[in-house]
Image (tube, rainbow, N blue to C red; front, side, top):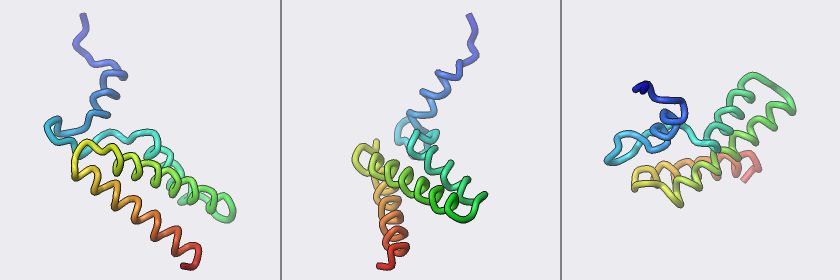
Length: 98
C-alpha cells in the first residue's frame, strides 16, 4: 500500500484550505482559475482580444468573490469576497465612465 497521496487527494486537501482550524488560503477554485487565465491572456494580448480577456478576468473574479461572500468558511474569507466584489464593481464602473 502506497503512502504517496494521489493528485485527487492533494486537490481535496488544497480545497479545504490552510490552516485547517481557520482556512485562509486554499488552492484556487474554478472561478478563480478562470479569472487568472483571463488576466494572463489580457497581459499577453492587445486590441479586442485584450478586452475580451479582461472581461473574462472580471467575470471570473466576480463569481469567485460572490461565492466567498455568500459561502466563505469564515469571516476573513467573506471579507476577501466583499473586497473582491467591491474591486470589480469599482473597476467596471470606472470603465463605463461612472
